[in-house]
Every structure is written in C-alpha cells, then in structure tokens.
Length: 568
Image (tube, rainbow, N blue to C red; front, side, top):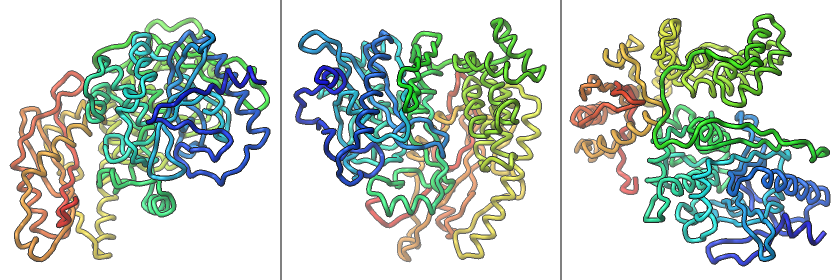
C-alpha cells in the first residue's frame, strides 16, 4: 500500500505561493462550494486511487512529458460539456529515479471568491468526488511540451498568470476575475508566446489567444439563473461580462471542451487520449485519437472545406452505408474518421444525431459535431448550425449565432444560405419589435428598431458578409469601444439632472475604413444621451479589420454607458 501511495500521491516541499491540499480534510473544489468537512468514504478513496493509477499507466504509455489533463468533476451535461476542470500533468524523476506524475492546477478556496494554485499528485487530483470517472489528456506538440515543462516546475513562472479574484464564469477576455481553466489557458499562451520568461501580462496572453483563433464556450444563462447564482455563491459573478452579452444571456467563458477543440483545430496537439471508465472496469483500454499537422505560428486557412477527394476505404464504405441507410455500419466506420478530425465525417455523424438516423435524436450532440466541422469551414455544417439556431423548434433560439453561421456558409458559397439568412433576420426583427413593445409598456428603455431588418447594416456589409471569426469580431469591437469612450461627451444637462443610461449602437464599417452607418439600436430612454453616443461614434476613427487573410467589412453592436459613478 505504501508503494502504491508513493506512485499516485507524492508529497514534497511546497513553495510559499503554493498550498498543498490534504486529502483527509475538506476538499478545495474547482468551481463549486466546499461540502461540509467529512472523512471520505472508503469507496470514494478506492475509486479515486484506481482512477489515478489508471491515468498514470496511460500517461506513461503516451510518451509525453506534459499533458493538459481534464476531468469530469461536475456534471455540466446541461451545457453540452463533458469535462469541468483542467490542470497540467507533468513527469518528473523522484529521488530514487522513478517516474512521478504531478498535477499543477488552480482551485478556488472552498466556494469563495479567491483562488490558489495547487501542486498535487494524481491521487489528489481525482479525489474530488466526481460525478463520473472520466478524463481526457491532451498531448501538446513536442516543442510546446518543451516550453511548458520549465514553467510548470518553477513556482515563480507558474504564478505569473495567476489572479486570485475568482469567478466560476469569468469572462474569457476580462481581467477582473480568473477561473481555473482560464489560468491554464493563459499559462499555456505565456509558455508558447514568451518562452524566454521576460515580463508578460494576462492581456498579452489573451491577445495571443485571439490571434490563434481561440473560441470560448458560450453558455446560455438567463437573468433569473444569474441572479440566483450570484446571491447564493460567492464564487460566481457576471459583472465582468460586457453588458450587451449579458442582455443576450451569452456568457462566454473558458471550458475544458473549448480548449480541447481549439488545440485540435489550431494543430497545437499531437493526440488526444480519452480515459473514460465506468466504476467497475478500470482496465478498459484508453481511446487514442492521433492528430495530424505540426504546430503553426499563424492562423490556419479559412478556405471552405469540400468533400475529401481521397477518402480511405473504410471512410468510403461508411458513406456508401449512409446512402444505403445502413446507419449502424455507417456510424461504426465514420466515427473513427470524425474523431480524427475529418470535417465531412463529423458532418455526417451530426446529421445522424440530428435526424435520428440509426441513433436517438440528440440535438446537442448534433450541434457539437456540426460545430467541429464548421470550425474547419465546412459550409454544409455552417448552414446546419444556422438553420438549427434560427429555425429549429427543438433548439433554443439564438438569432445572433444563426446569422453568424449563415453568413459564414454564404461566404463559402452555400447556395441556400442567403435565402435562409433573410428569413432569420426577419424573425429577429419581429422578436426585437415585440421586445420593444414590452419594454415601452413596462416603462423601460426605448428600443429603436428600423422597419427593415437590414436597415442598421450598411450596404457594404450586406453585400459582402464579414470574414471575421467570433474572436476577431470581439477583438475589433473591444478596440472600437475603447476609442469610442474617449470621444463621448456627457451632456451637461444630463449631468445636472443625474440622468444615466446605456445606449447600444449598431455600427457598420466598410473596407475603405469608412463608417458607413451608426444608428441607435437600443435607446437609453434619453434623447440627449442617444445623440451624444451617436456623435461620439461618428467622430471615432475606424479601421476595417483584417480577418482570415482579407480586409473585411464588419457590423457590430457597441455599448455606450453614461454613469455618474466614478468607479465605473
């Protein structure tokens, strides 16, 4: 037993900036409040240690020195997420020369709004009463492992990206809070972008991630849920999210699943290892997905992906079986290709889940597979995402996402995307008009909506949909809003009468660096504040974004807040 514990629960001298959690005390939880202190149950200890030993065996066979190790701690399946928490597992030699795996990760302090870094053994990492015993190891490219290892083993460098203020749903591009997965992602960015160890900030890490097209998960969390979470949990806060995103119930945060998808698509990983175990079969073989391509210093191509002209024999047989409605055979043949990253296979698996071809209808799973194919610019998947978000009655309506994906499909030559795009925009307009009537009758802010759904979008944007990704659009918007705030002048009469409010502007910019349209989309309820926001927008210099290798027009919603609170 002592030898076993030495393998999976190594102890060592911790530096002052680190805290070593004790298994036999109340556990520090990643993103959930601490449970009352109690002795762990014998079965929990047994399963935790068995999962740790199983993971150690898998990591030893992987040939890696560093992996990003995710676990299924909390049940996040309601958000279509498989894993909840991520840390770095790295290999070191113990004093007697044996190989030891340690985990460096971030945990909030028992449900509080503060968090610390922990350096633990694999046994402690899995001793967190998970809802299921499942893990994923993302093996980075060899050059990235070489850059990560010295960072992880050096307390000073490992803490550079750590921010103690903690929120479980911290905004991906914000600096006010930082959750566990966000620290891991920003530390990875620092290690790759700044291998020499010079001064480096979270802002620089986030800029690098934007440039590498990292896309966070978007959680649909309504106002009642947000309010309840904020009141009941010290470690949940939403005030770092841009107001316009909160109004749309779009909470953008870093998840394990989004990191896995990004590392695969950005070709930063060489393989994925799935360690999915039930409670009684810890000897089942791991599932390894090999990924092609070496690490790159720039963005991948944004050209539209078409069908694979040279499918493998198994893949071709899978498509033949799909056409012949032999869905069980099609699924078994195409799933390995889909897991290996083939966009057409991913799209086909998504279709089977969407329409119940040989599988139970599962729209969340369909969206997941379509998203993986769409991230590779496969236009049929982009079209399907737009269709599901915009018209499917079984999927939560998200017109902004529908417009985004249909624009992408249209720009990649999908013939039916423009017709559906017009339909979705008309539905979005009707929804905004209904919201305007409701807010007006309730005495809230006036919502200004033009009679034409596209009237707020300049001709240059309407005829040439943007090539910008969501991350590029967000980065451009942030820069524009920063410049816009400098141009805003608070009306003197509004200051004297203490009038405050927020204006949402619709801004269109053409490729000739011309602001083709600036209009009020959501009013503050005060005409002088609306006019001040418009005047500031028209004075703000703009540059059309350079997205996906081309100069692109863009249309965004920009908030302008008028407040007399100096802290804001």
